[in-house]
Image (cartoon, rainbow, N blue to C red; front, side, top):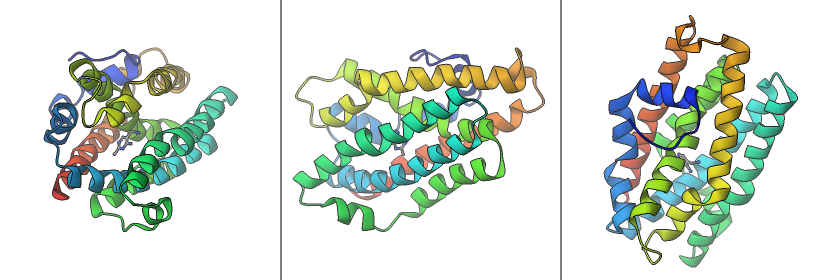
Length: 228
Ligand SMILES: Cc1ncc(CN)c(N)n1
């Protein structure tokens, strides 16, 4: 399976669940974003939910600061919280404002069950487990959107209806976040599991967290389509 290079750990985990990764990264919602056929109502429904999703993801990355074992890990996790709340969410706020939806309305929106399931699953992985459990659950979110954004940007024109969304994830800012987290993950895995992480006793459980989070991404797109 090919895609951008965000490090060996992510590559192994993605290869560990090819069907689920395909269902996530090639979902009908994604195809609709790319070719512009996604109904606007579905996009807005998704975007409001995604704003709430990012609120909880910022909480999960804050938990990663708590679970860090090195200052370097701590710095990268803290920077990711900053990137989520001040950059990625800005796109959501801007698009929704143009549609007459205020940021307060976004914050007060009712969470869909798929959103609760996904975000609380990730938070629980971090509460119950250690830094690697949390990273395995966070990884599909970070790298999946990086991969999808790059692929859609390669195939769509500058005036594409969802060009703003595509560019948020294809742009150097987001791609740099993916590369930085990918490198941090390599170091975190080597530090805790040694040089042969896939042969370690913990690998199956970490893969399971990654696979479950990927399945929850598929459900998130399904939920978006329901808003059409
Ligand atoms: C559901 C979901 N997954 C991933 C991302 C990318 N941070 C996101 N904004 N929303």
